[in-house]
Length: 614
Image (cartoon, rainbow, N blue to C red):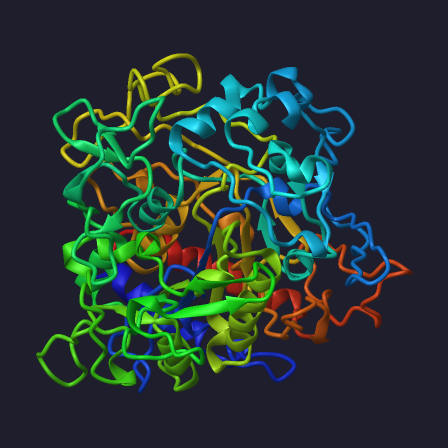
């Protein structure tokens, strides 16, 4: 009773004028009274551990960290390309530049044959590249026991007619800088990013899609397949887990989806984060480009064959790719017929608001529904966003320029919403596509399939005991951490111009949702959520938020409005003299009296402590 009364008193204190905003900003500190306040936008009042009431995960495809950040924050700045110059005090990152791997590199290994090469810069005219080999076994062999020297041989692919390494398997060593992935570099300057984020396992898109919602790839149930278990010589979607079941290691379409292949389908028997959110009545949704089969594109394409033409990759690209759809693999959260929601007001809800009738969409929607519900003030607490395929960044059918347009459009929209003040956006990736990255983490989750596992020798990936599967027994096929991928946090509470070195994985996003909305409840069944690193280092929840917008041009990544500097975490937010951003640092939105910030931080800490016991 004492604890409950104390919590009530703290809640009252946190709502007093001592925490009222400065500089005209809306109050940021009402989070302790509930993660989703009672209003027209929400149907519950669940509390959140942090000030974040809305999380939007923009889940992109197939990029390694070095592929986009090899020389960050130094860009070449050739004439005719968007220029980028970093702020003074930009922290160093673990990349090819700082590791001195641009002029000397192990991938000149003669075993790579004609693909042997040094890393090289790709410019905007080379935005369209070949898709690299990113299978579970191929990536392990490229990593070669941590030597990181056989990428061209095992994962490399070149573009026909390409000049130099671009036309050979050495293309896998290519990287972009801030003159092409300009928006990402600007987001990293204003907000925060990780240089130590990895996939949970080796392998391609579907395992990555499952990890970010469940932390588990074991428990595959084959619905239809013509494939045999994967081997070193021939890749397939699954291997025997050693316990009489299957672990997914490569791509397979979700079972029963109207757009899935008829010969290659599977379902998962475990649980995902959507199940836990449903148990607590927390609004959430998965939003996929091309998911609404009733729409027609301007080219007349419709249904499962809706396509968009990309002038950069010069082809019509299907908007919806079934094997990227996280929640379709679980019966509890699947919408196999792509049924439409009852209304925009139903989006995010299990039941049609005001009724006991389940909403037909079952939390699975089109990307256009995300825009609609956000603009109507009905943004769910948790949203997973997948852009139409031509904008998802996957080499071969997408590219960094189309990707930038899609990502910036979403981020610009969210910053203009009233909910921006308590929103966090995570730009994350499902896999590396096999692109070269120099960072290696010795696997802490082992796997010992005699054919598919090859990282540390024949039949060996990692050491120690294999992780548990959905039935609680040690299983094969979950070797990781795998490949390093980008992770960017965009939020009024994100640290500014900050690089986190904390080891995190895709399942860390599951953990953040569990910790923030669910009191730390875990999925169980061997999910990596229980051991994944926390992403909290990307944020500073004990200071006044900075709700100033950073609106970028989707085509160039240049700034339309706002400033890069403003709330520097480490006090290094002033511009260098030759910065293209102009103007002086304006910290008015992030400053408040030391007594207020100290008291708010103290009460927040007390609240967090007490919340663990009530």
